[in-house]
Length: 189
Image (cartoon, rainbow, N blue to C red; front, side, top):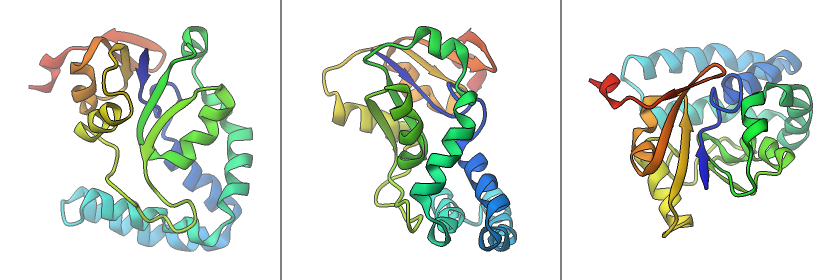
């Protein structure tokens, strides 16, 4: 089986940021929340706010929209962002493991016919987490819980923050745009 990150890996861009901006363009209530989200983002960047706390603040915009409806419209407009190299290599047993909210990415992976998706457990109506952010080592924990004896043939990600998953794969690739590069852990030093 092959395992993929989602944002900037098989999808061109950050689906969370794109969904937030998509909703802000359509909804005045979401636009009004942007300054607070930006200030909290600065606080996170400076180390004053924990990542998951910042993300919950950001996802609070979900409480003022019809998320299920907006998701469908968003993916109608953004499925073109799925990279061709992925479509050409897709397999039936592919797994997507992402730090993005599972509900957000699942809408796209369902359309692609991907059966296995693991993402951050974010409530689509409140933006609150019901578990840990699916990032770094947590991705390995989630993978092992779902597939205790499975081996990863090939792993693909745009970020060395996914090194824990790369280490348990037979082969790992760093995705830069549409290029697949050999995973090089020496870049971490």
